[in-house]
Length: 273
Image 1 (cartoon, rainbow, N blue to C red):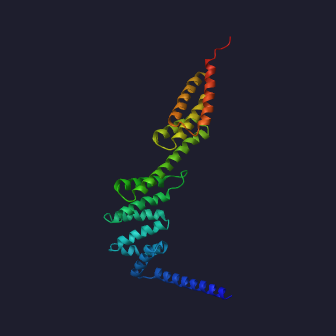
Image 2: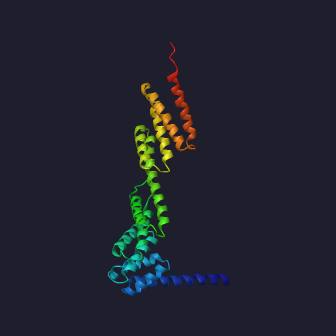
């Protein structure tokens, strides 16, 4: 019973301190004392209490415009938005900071976090990729401008990730034509994809589905065109294995290859009188 009372008392004390702490913070928010707000915002920021810091910084930022502290306030505001995952607002505020303080020591870091804000906004590959493209553009500007930056390695990693996402979206769109049996559109789209992204990790898959699309057209062609198209398929088959000797699609490709050769053999068999 004594243990229970001690435990209950400890919890009660913590709750009281929390209530008074919240009460003091609320009073500060309602206060007109900009100096206290500025000092408290910086304290909260340095302690990682970004949400509390942000609410104060939003209030004081307009009041400090043009003052010596304005640079710090604007950077803290942008960074507090980033750390509370308000990435659209952080991107906006970092861009404003860069334009307002082009000679700031924090400009490089702000440029990186502006780009990274758009990276955080980049959605799943199947959705609209405007923010992905914006992030890529911002990251490329950063890489070109600060090639020796301590953030360059991370920036390059993010670029690869975002570029892969765009490639995956385009690949899936091209592949969709095959899925709906629009084989001619699939061939055209996949061929364009391979040309546009010669180094893509989806190239093997693109070549495979291009082969499958050609295959469906060839085996269903009229006799006059079938032999020529089947021979073109054999060229594409050899091309896939030349680039990808251990392709993950080898089993199905080999089945199709045997079927192609079986059909071609019928063209070589003389007609029986």
